[in-house]
Amino acid sequence: MSRKQREAQEQTALFEWASLMRGRLPGIELMYHCPNGGSRNPAEAARLKAQGVKPGVPDIFLPVPRGGFHGLYIELKAPGGRLSQAQANYIAALRANGYAAGVCVGWRKAAEIIEKYYESEEGYETQADT
Image (cartoon, rainbow, N blue to C red; front, side, top):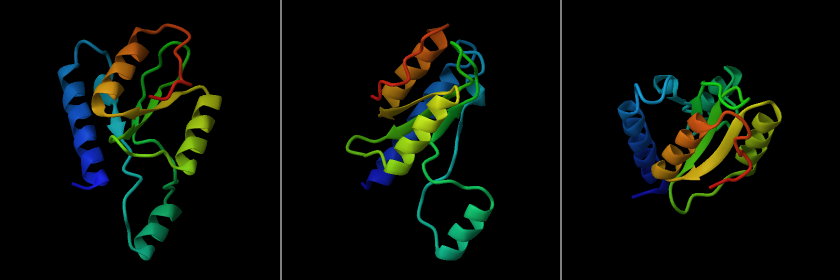
C-alpha cells in the first residue's frame, strides 16, 4: 500500500471518529478536509492554482475557536510520512496569525490533539508537533 493510500485510510478513520464525537465535541461536524494535494496533469494544476490552491495548506481544518485560537489546522501524516518545507512554512504562518496548527502521525494522535484542543481554554500548545 502506498503512503498516499495509508494517509487516506488514516484520514477516513479520523472523520469516522469525529462523526462519533458529535454531541460530545460541539462543532466537530464543521471539521473538513482541504483536498489540496495529489498528482495532477499540468493543465489541471495550473487551473487549480489560478483558483487559489496553495502548496502547504494542512489537510484538516476545525473552524471552532478555543483557548484564544481562531481554529485548529492539522497536517495528518501516515507513519513514515514527512513534512514538506511548504507545509512547515504554512503551519508557521497559521500559528503567527492566531491559529492552532500542528502535525499528527496517525488518526489516533490527531483525535487526541482535537480532544486536548476542545479541553483548552488558554495556552493550547501548538508548537509540539506529534
